[in-house]
Image (cartoon, rainbow, N blue to C red; front, top):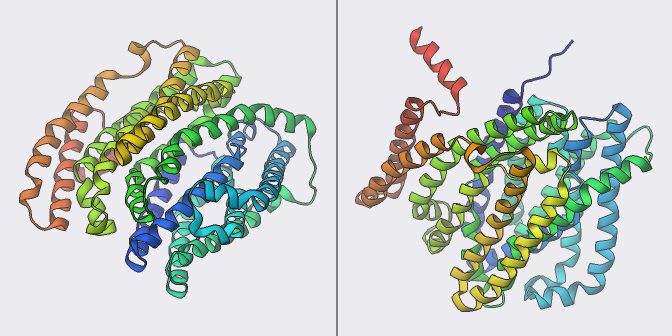
Length: 487
């Protein structure tokens, strides 16, 4: 009998795979900005914004519902939930295509995206391929397939990297990376259909009762996602009326995020949510609370140092990756990465696991109303600074509101919610090390050596302090090192 991998091994497998993949993901824009002009890059980023936003809107969080239904279903139920998820995607794609082909010109003109009006079919193709393949990583996680969780993310990013390089060399201008996106999405879809074929054949049948329960679960979550998208992308659409494609290219770099950190969150949350779902369905509040608190303990331990380091090296990161031409993006990037200090509290995993998705909707509804109201004032009056502040508010406000709902569900006060002592140790340790590095780093002239030196000193010092304070998140790795040195 095969033993199921532990939560730690599953999360580690996903994290390792995503980290390797992120390396290649980083190189994609690095290559693009060196092969096309800043204006063409800005148009491509606008295409990504439009296509990616529509793709997320049409997704309606159907794939997320698998985390709840798949673990509690029998073999037949698992087949039906995957079949119905793909069917729901197809239905949304069909409705969108009919509307967009009829009114797409008016929509794109209103949003000031006139540079790719003739490429409406490209948008439909990209979001169709992307939606239908969006469940693949979810399936790997739910199957507890640690091997594919390690192999697939880097393989996916390598294929994406190759697609971009080849197509951009063959097709000049902004059209090159757009076609590359579509080619990559098609390859991903082909593999997805190949992997999930065992769930799709030999029979395809709709289970009405299961479909109803899936829709009841996802509709509040899906509308919450729509509101969240409005909240977090409002600035990007609205600011486009006041800036050129070249300026948008610079502004879009503010959302570089901290890729490794994002992958870490995703790896942990994807594994923890099904376990919380099982605990909550068994009314085991205590176990769910412990899982949530341990998750926050781990994510905060990594998040706080990562935010400090990327904030300190913002100028160097933007320059090395995207050339000096994009250096202005660093000041907006420094503002946006502050949102990780809120996201490290792992919002919504309790609401998802407890099937309380209506509260996610309420959180995003309130957040969207406030964000749009503030954005209508901030963006016209403060331009890009107003836009990035609007984006920050739109990102963190729904998180804060949903966290309040989650604390109440679990019966936790602010005081007993998390280990504030460990968070404080982490924060002030980073502050103590970060301030001198920020003040003196520019005395090192070579940008590459400066970045390496600052990162090395910061990571090494923080790791030592975390070990001393017993808050080092990679404790298994530490034990292995101790064994090696003892030998």
